[in-house]
Every structure is written in C-alpha cells, then in structure tokens.
Image 1 (cartoon, one colour):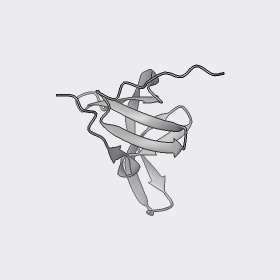
Image 2 (cartoon, rainbow, N blue to C red):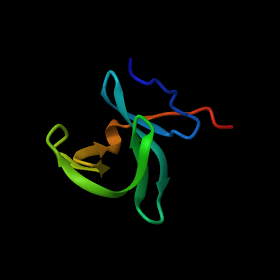
Image 3 (tube, rainbow, N blue to C red):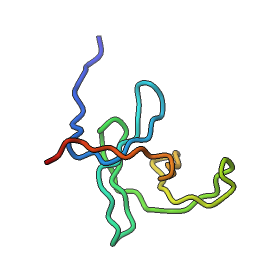
Image 4 (cartoon, one colour):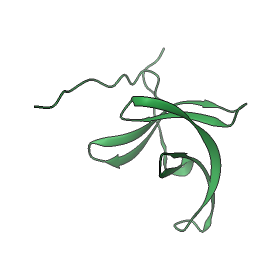
Length: 85
C-alpha cells in the first residue's frame, strides 16, 4: 500500500490540474523578482521564472512559468483560496 498524506492547502493560491491524481500548486508569486513558487501535489516547491510562451490554442503569447518540462500558462491556473485567515 502506498503512503498517503494530506496536502496543506492553507498557502495555495492557484491550481493547474494535470490529471485526476496530480496538480501543479501555486504557493506564491514574487512580482519584484518575476518568480512563482510552485510544486506538484505540494512536494518539493521550487521558484520558477515568469516567462511568455506562444500557445497554439489562443494564438497568442501567454504569461506563465516552466515547472520542469511543463509550461503552466496563468490563463489556465484556477484561483484557489486555501483557507488562510
């Protein structure tokens, strides 16, 4: 049986679904440094540079970031209120 753990969603501000068991979580945005703190399923969060990439679906440059080989466009990130007070 695999280990199961709860993901702390209190500091998550955005979610980009990859599949039914995985998602890119956006934890913070640093506008001064043009970076995004992101992780997959809340593990090993890393700072990623903001960038623009051409998207065939829209035919335009879209603002987003690369997490590993994945380009995550902000236009497809769902805003999430993690319950932080």
